Amino acid sequence: MNPFSKKECIILTVIFFITAISVFSSRSIRLYSTAAVSSENGSVLFLYEQTTLDGLAMILVNHDIRIDTQEMLWAGQTLGWRNFRPGRYEIEGRLTYGQFLSKLARGLQDPARITILPGLDPGRLSRNLSLQLRADSTTFRSLFSDSSDVALEAGLSGEELFSRMIPNSYDFYWTTSAENVARRILSEFDRAVKNNLADEIENHPLSLEEIIILASIVEWEARHNEEKPRISGLYLNRLNRNMMLQADPTVNYALGERRRLFFEDYQVDHPYNTYRILGLPPGPITNPDLASIVAVLRPENHDYLFMVATPQGTHRFSRTFEEHRRASEEWRRWLREQHRIRDQREREEGG
Image 1 (cartoon, rainbow, N blue to C red):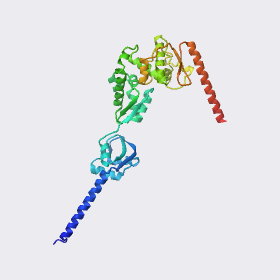
Image 2: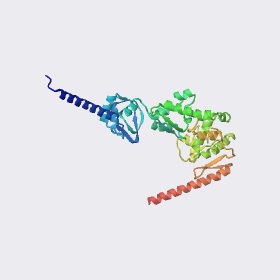
Image 3: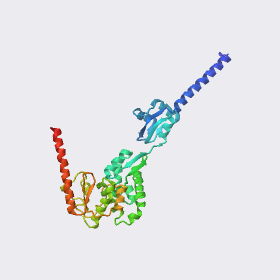
Image 4: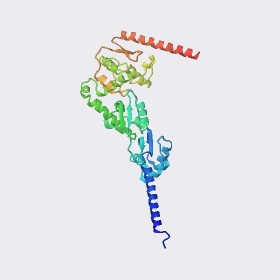
């Protein structure tokens, strides 16, 4: 005999459906709430390797993304997002669990803006890239050897490949391989220089490799772009007259230091020291920017053969050695005065 009356059965059925609907609605609200994951000021999440749902929860514990990690574990199991790809992910505003977890599971990375600075050496460039991308500095540094795959496929030496890492800003995915980073930057060099300046390169007395070598010296020497054509013209004048280049940056390169040079430094026995060799050094000393390359292609037409630094960070140019000697002495007097002022200030502070 049925212990419940018909009326009671109806009431129990209604209660069951109401409860089921409430539970379903609660789960749906939790699953699809746009406030489940939030980062009001924007946050960047890095996954260094393939990560499980539990691993992701551990990473998020100490992250500034606002999320209930226990509820996220439940949501991931429910929605089927349980494994997440390495990458750099920008999290901004409010997201549902599904939006957040599917982004990471599908590997939908946000590109990073990478800036290549001019006037670097291979070591510094490699370190800078490793700070901005997943590959380490050793991997990047190995690209600039003669035996690297990228150098070989481009028909370049390691030094030549490095010198064509043309300064600019690039968008890369964080997990992009070091090789593909170099290929992309090299393609930008080919577009901006080899293709866009092809006629000027063809008609220049120097080869492309020599143009880049001279541009690398101009890059190191000049602090201001407006001086680059004049400096380039001076070096070309010296080359055309079969004079030693006598470029201080090549001595710094030979010494492996960026500092003020002393008399004995110019005597260093090194194939890049243009105070001891005639003509251009055997390779580039920096990665020149487009302005330095264009300055070599379009040098200022003048008779200057000498230059010396000025207190303003520019150069004073001279046509004769006598003019240069006087300008150099003025520069040395200024330096001595600065040293005197510095020493006096240190004595006063120490006393």
